[in-house]
Image 1 (cartoon, one colour):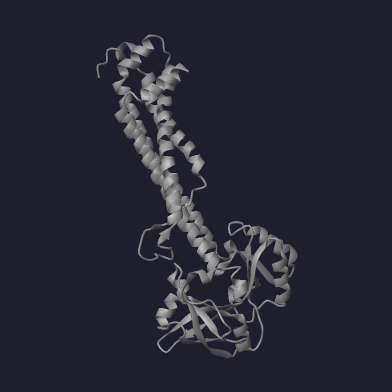
Image 2 (cartoon, rainbow, N blue to C red):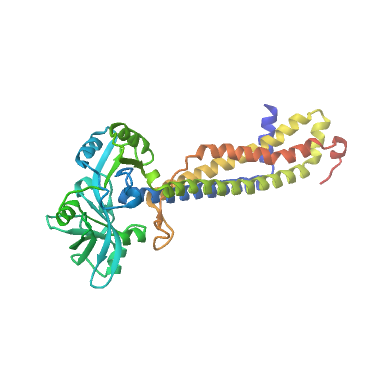
Amino acid sequence: MMITKISWRNVWRNKMRSGILIASIAIGLLGGIFTMALITGMMESKVQESLITDLAHVQIHKTGFEVNNSFKDSIPNYQAIVKIAEKDSLTKGCSPRVIINGMASSANDSQGIKIIGMEPNKEKDVTEIQSFLIEGDYFKGKRKNQIVIGQSLAKKLKVKIRSKIVIAYMGPNNEMVNTAYRVAGIFATSSPDFDKTVVFTQSKDMWRNAGQKFIHEIAMTSIEGGSKPNGLRDHLKSEITKKDLNIQTWREIMPELSALAETGNTNSYIILGIILFALGFGILNSMTMAIWERSRELGVLMAVGLNRAKVFTMIVLETIYISLIGGVIGAGLSIGLITYYGEHGLKYSESSIAGFSNVVYPLMPDSFIPLFFMILVTAIVSALPPAFRAIRLNPAEAVRYKG
């Protein structure tokens, strides 16, 4: 008990040094946690936008469709599969889709596109493309051959709302299908490539134009959320036993997107490790200087009977106290900033960069609590060299040290 009190008082003997060290730990921790929160927010935003624009949580295809992307690889007896998917206890939304690669043309230009034909009411339970609309509407009214396109495609084709564009694709019987569609809405996501190459229309229009009904993809969302799509996938695999169907989560469909999120976590830990490494050297330098200045005092303590183990403990406790104070302040500042910008967003550029939104909403890192233990370990390790130096002092020589 005596050692803990002495250690606490020693922290405030040199308020300037302790204050600078506490401030450096707090600012360093703030920088590390807030950087992790920004990276986590950016990656989560990218993943979530991909899920709510077209990817969804789980998809069903005929085996081989994801490789060949052939018009003929439609899901046989898709109505029965859709009913099973809709009735699953983990299913939140289910949207059967037509997926075709084709060409969009206007009087000014043309562009290769991916055409997604769907039922708007069911698609709203799976994706939220309507929330990205900047002009027009999302298939309102009963007009035939409506199409919703991205802002980048609209600029390339030089079209606007109510303009006509011709969509061409190879039909089910290897015949070319050319149909004029009228632009009903224009959307803008953070990915210019997506906006340029993906369009949405109604499956009933595609069926009428092609002369038959067909579905290439059944997209679903899980009530457990996009972070836990495996439960819905496993449910469906147990209920749908057809070997010619492939049931996959978004992580399996786009492993690069999943890897991107994992890379973000790794980068966060690397940044935090660098910050803690720098803090460790700061603590080591400050405590070493403190030992030099207090050599006479430490010599007197050991001369009057304070054993070396207690001297060692005293030095380490001082470092732990300083680190914990700095850690608590840094954590408090981090929570405040993350909470504020998590609600209001942090705009770091005027436009999206590399497919990432220009507004970031920081998210609290999952490893927030373990950070305190990392700081504690850093403090203890940094305090060891000065503490060992202190207990190696010769009391007879130390009491004569005049600094």
